[in-house]
Image 1 (cartoon, rainbow, N blue to C red):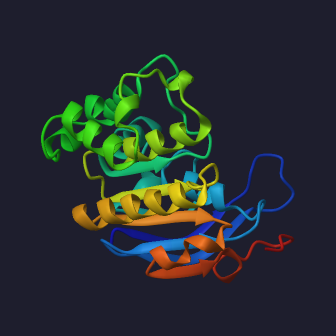
Image 2 (tube, rainbow, N blue to C red; image 1 turned 180 degrees about the vertical axis):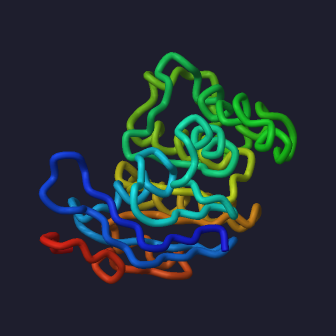
Amino acid sequence: MTLILRGLSYQWPDAAEPVLNIPELTLGAGERLLLRGPSGCGKSTLLAALAGVIDVATGAVEVAGTDVASLPPSRRDSFRVDHIGIVFQAFNLIPWLSARDNITLPCTFSARRRGQLVASPREDADALLAALGLASMASTAASALSYGQQQRVAAARALIGGPELILADEPTSALDPDAKQTFMRLLSGEAARTGAALLVVSHDPGLEDHFDRVINMSDINFPEGVTC
C-alpha cells in the first residue's frame, strides 16, 4: 500500500471539537480515489495531514512505508518533496518564476525525482505543459497566467518526477468542462504511467468516472459535533 492511515484524529488549536476522526483509510499503488464532501468537512485538513504539513498528535499516516506523522518537521519537508506531489487549492506558485521553472522546482530539491525523469527537467516540464495545452506559456511568469492556467501548472509541478502519492485539493475548480476532462485524463494517465496513488478531494460529481473508488467524507470521518 502506498498510503495507510490509522486512528487519525486532528483538532485545530482553540477549536472546541476535532475536525478529523478517521479510523482507517488505505490507498494502493496506481489506485485512484475521489473523496467527496462539502466545505468544512475536513477534506483540505486531511490532505495537509497526509502531506505532513500539519502536526498529527494521534494516529499513524504511512506513505510509501514511512510514518510521516512521526517524522520531525525538517525530515517531513524532504520526505514530502521526494515522495508526494501536491496540487494545493491556492496553487502556491512562485509568481516571478516562469511556468516551466515552477514545474521543475521539485526536481531542484529532490535527487530522487530528478532520477525518475523521462528526459531532463526542462523537457519533462515542456511535455507536461504541451499535454495541458500550455506549450506557448512555458516562459510566461506565473503571475501573468490566468487562474485556470495556474491550476494546470500546479498540477504539472505535482506530477513531474513521478512521486508515489499525488494529492489534489479541488484541482478542477477553475476549469471549463473541456479543460476539466483534459486535465483529469492527464492527471489519471500520469499517475497510471508511474504507478502513483492518486487522491483527489472535491465536491464536483462530474469527476467520478476518472476514479477507481469514490468515497464520501462522511463515510470515513466521524468527528464529534461535525456533520458532513
